Image (cartoon, rainbow, N blue to C red):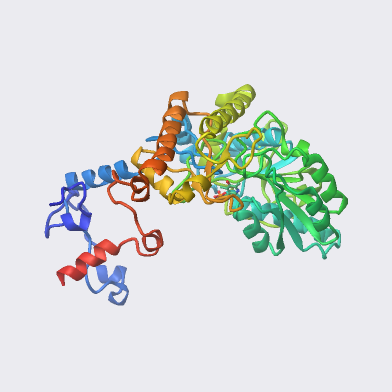
Length: 491
Ligand SMILES: *Cc1c(COP(=O)(O)O)cnc(C)c1O
């Protein structure tokens, strides 16, 4: 027998049951035919569930309990920076003065919003060491593409049409080579060395007259700081290329170092990672892009400028690559990020990075006796483990991830970066308490012991969730299989 908790809302449906009450009509009804000719109207009524209001409320409450989010539990998803979203950000984004604005209002009525955008541009310039920021791009990958189009416009303006290649390390986030290709370049891979850092000799071999850019993040996607970054920058600059910084997760560098000071020419940030605006489930996000002076002429217009005491949209970019998004970026997300930056202040942001790096190193050292650690040096805000040892016992990294669900955790990123065998990539963030970090480490250690003594319990996990192990391909391709199966059964 199924309880309401487990039933699909379609299974709860009873003919004629109504969950809403609308006031009586106090105007003349409109002639439906006039409104929408019958050829455009559905022939059969839509198959909607018919349930009471309380059943509906319970349905959504039950669904929300099955969801794992940062507000409900630890979410150490490496590379994705799932940090706490302070609720004050939400309050401020809902201020009627922000939430009820219309993008076509005249500038004179938008001074507060423009001031906020201007100050956010400036804060992000200060954080990244760039000369000008645009808030337009809607996400990280969109920022990457925008930044690469700026680099392309720069080379083309110099008559430099032969720069067709973007160099990307083998540990890079998958969006990097993808964005390079979408922006019209060929992505070429530079190897990592045994230490997990870019192989400088290989980089020298690749850099040349056909190099448009090197795309990199530092700390890199293994959580390691590329200490030769200044030399890498000069290799690329001497070859005539530009340096692109993937700043999706800048949790390790806030107030510590800046891409602009390392020699980067372009950077994007994910406000929905580092700057605490919510993400997951498809957005909306915000991926501002910052550039050095020689790329400013190509920025998407408008940006926000200040003249005396007033603010305005600045359109005077004759060499602009054009708009990359309607209106002015995801404004509500930018309000949240601005609120966060103002709440923390420069010293607060620096403390974020200190704490994020300390938390990651603490967990790395606690887990090191139980899992292989491919790189010995200190990590930054995230670290990788290898499940090689457990694989020999028949327990794969996927099994470890599934077993973590039994302990109430969202698993870390797995099988990424691809150059680490049976990889687990863990990012605790700065907002978690030592108790939470310890409890998660205890769970990981227990799983490592189970792999030795009782591998089946890990291989068959999860045991405590609503559904056990899903066929993940099938689940992605046919999410409503169960509903369909039920229909077939009743036919
Ligand atoms: C998340 C992420 C991206 C992509 O950002 P989206 O907003 O998902 O498009 C790019 N690079 C790195 C390193 C990331 O972690």
